[in-house]
Length: 200
Image (tube, rainbow, N blue to C red; front, side, top):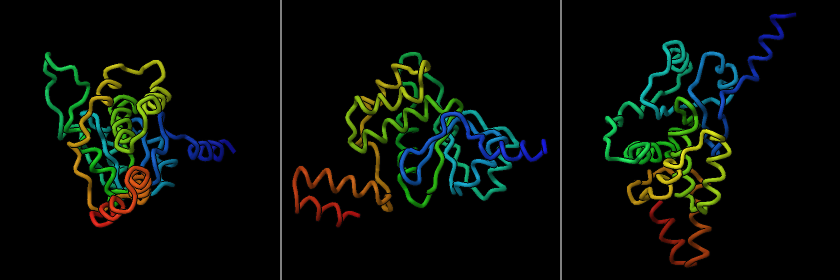
């Protein structure tokens, strides 16, 4: 009886900060072995790690055994912090992260960092900016996950991030294309819509 209760509860043990960002895109803190019974049901193809720290060996093995591609973007883009910079993360990290998660070939994709708040929250905030959310809504979402751990520098980074740095992948999610069509059609109907369709 006790073993049954333990196995059942493991199915309901999501990581902290876990949530759906958009269809095919999810977020969480660093995965631990106890989370995998819950995680397997989503059939993730890709895990994007934004922190420089490595997941522990057991977690890495479970990711590999599940046929999931682990992209350790935090290590690939990490650079020693310069005393003169205020940026909490590098623009390169956010640029490459956005290009990865917007590529449907990586979906379903899980974005994670050590806390599930700082790098992940900043990336999601910049994604919302790319989706043309107003800044107040972006910050409300960021703070709903960060709580008392919210950092002003992360919010400032989101506000100042240059979206022109991002090269959109050729295979974009349907929801992203529909959002762009609706936004552009409200501003400049038929010709703008044709331009979007031809570019995709």
